[in-house]
Length: 121
Image (cartoon, one colour):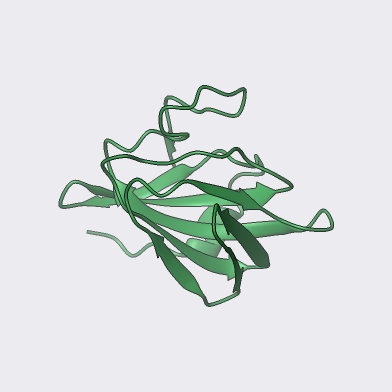
């Protein structure tokens, strides 16, 4: 059991849309990711997904609405809900993700941004 400094962990990587695992509890993983520009429309059929914003503004598009998350905001995307994360104006956004270990990065969507083996940092 060791304290984790989240800001220091964010400084260990620069890749966008490539979550890094920083912890695990009760079958859930805590991940950090940097987002920039657009991701891909996807859903997670069996898993809820928590987004918490540490830096910047994240736009989460849904088929019926758009949510704008700013630093300090969080939003839980329920299982099965299709979503499209993106940023605006070239801004890099720092995000903490909390999701079950079995969650696939882009759900069932295969895309060039899909990451299969997420790294621990």
